[in-house]
Length: 126
Length: 126
DNA sequence: ATAGTCTGTTGGGTAACCCTACAGTCAAGG
DNA sequence: CCTTGACTGTAGGGTTACCCAACAGACTAT
Image 1 (cartoon, rainbow over the protein chains, first blue to last red):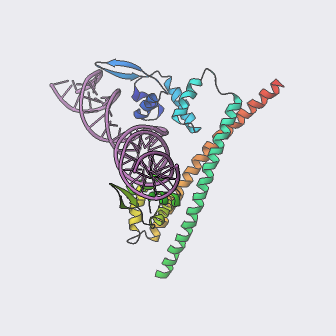
Image 2: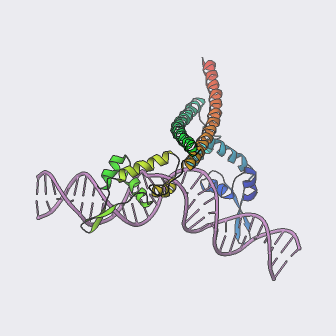
Image 3: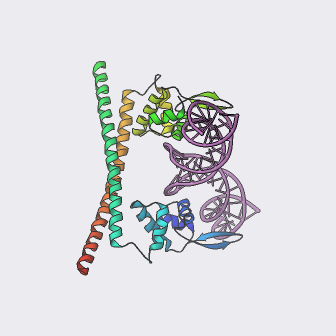
């Protein structure tokens, strides 16, 4: 299948697909078209793309996903390693959440102060 | 003062300072040194840098901060505009929090499953 | 023959810096 | 006096995960 179809089914842009390929995450065979070549994808890439998105959701960068996909089938993570990794992810997420809560509080306070200012202005003009 | 001092006091890198200057957020006067020129900063930039960091915390990009700093002293945001802006920021933060909660849940579930696997493996080996 | 839709590559842009390399300046020490 | 070291500068590439525009060949339908 050609890139447009892959992109449509996978729900992403052609540039995104080509980007994955450039990063070595998926592969295509060149289909000749006159003097040029089109990327021809095996429908199986759709599953790989799904795995990539999944891994991204888990916090892997594309660079990290490469080796991960290759590990698929050969020596893979042990359950213990998986648990350790997931715990790390969870810690990272909790850190982000804490940071967001701080900012949220900061903004909330500012917001309240400004709301009071607006209220007072309204009263003064009334 | 020279860039190193500014960077040290402001708690950021020289490259960061130069970056701010390149973005037009702060300014320096050239101090001649032989055939070359060093950036000479007025200590007042420290306050400006503080304002920049503050604005960043509020979710402004550096590009947005430029006009904001210039507005300082002339026509500034009205309290109503400020409230509206802060509300937008808050909504954005809540969205990020919701996204993080989803991922968190996802990972937590996976983690529990894998923990169970590890437990069973332990029992089996025992 | 031509228009429209597909494909390709190339190169630049994004955000906020970090890092390396190369080089001039200047003060202190041998 | 010269060298060393700590400081400064610019230039250019790297980061992340793509997006976008330009230009052009391929293919299908009219």
